[in-house]
Image 1 (cartoon, rainbow, N blue to C red):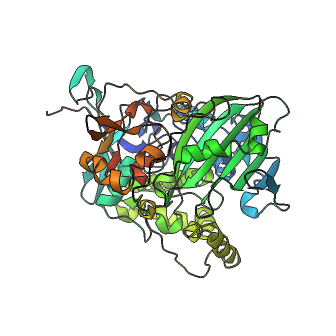
Image 2 (image 1 turned 90 degrees about the vertical axis):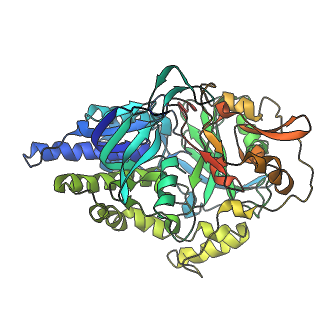
Image 3 (image 1 turned 60 degrees about the vertical axis):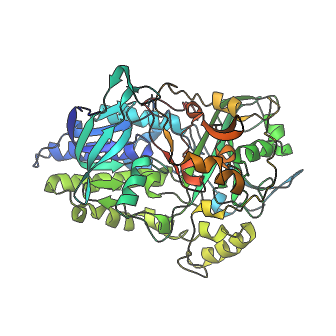
Length: 551
């Protein structure tokens, strides 16, 4: 059917209200305010900045470790300490080696695990606070709107079309049908987080890839309330070893927050050999370690979440500018893969994008030639200083932890170079081995007190979708799922998804993929880890998804 869409025009359209998108909006609004106060021409307006957020509230979809380096926040909001909801400063940084029955604290904490000067935060709360500052600066912030489709113009982009609302699961209009808006802008900023659906389209269409494909990990996290005295606020521990195989890359974290709360989780690189490896089960197993079990004994699960993260670093960073467009934050691979820290880099990337856009607005020139200054600004900032030192770090671990420690040690000495520079990488899904008829493992059930099945955890994520809407998980060839994938890989989507979205169900004598899209926590793991790359994650109806309040 032909849809008539209302058109709106803005100077700047920012897709995504995370740390990067909101930092871009706030910094640009502040630059415009100072510019207008000076009497300079042309006069600009913060009201011509639009920010789209697909969550039902600002911060609802924000999940991170989260340890924050405050450097970028201090630049953006110099008096942040007065009002920012920073939970607690880090008071102790520990690196723990886990065996199945015991733990060992490394006497001298290695530099990547040292978090002195950083804060333990709820990223959801921080982003909600930033959203208030952005709205107070006059920026238009639209909740429950996702970017569904890019508007292309010449060699670049000119805005987005938001998702249609009020379609049933067959794509037919319901009584409350509202077409998406056509939002056109002089500059569109993609701040969608890891594996952003629009960013994926743009990078593929315009061939913006770097020399390495992006590498990804999945972080699975729970927030607990524990009895008083179990953990000190500001205590930060990272764990290596059991139950993560030495052939894999991953580890756990434990962060002490105020009010007897603990943030804990496990992060695993999405490049393992066994297609039936289950990151959610690995996390639940990790919690049974005596150190973690004792910490959580007598406590209660409060929240659950999962998020993918970009490991690839400098050599996987896509070209981040085109005519009329910039890429910021996790969408642009701004994450330190050694420290697993990215909030400050995402914010700084948003601020540098704002400075580039500000100059473009003054010149009224939005070409790639002008917006290329964004990349030049990055190259002269601490973003490159930090990421260049770890440019080969994650690639070092492609053959396991021992090989990785050897190479990363040499990189520490040589400023990130190591033996090979650049080290090349392959897409993580290419690492899968064939199952060769091996039987499927039993499904994990959990004990309901310390460990949980997926559906119990999803309940604690606050996830909510209208079930009568088009499925936002597009599988391009369902026959592959029921034939080749059964035989070759045992349907890994049933294992890598941390939200029980995918299951193979019998219909008579045949298997068919069943998609429980209402469970989706928007981690994008399926889009990343599918061995045939036939799953596309697209935005659901605005407002759907998890609610990570307090995480």
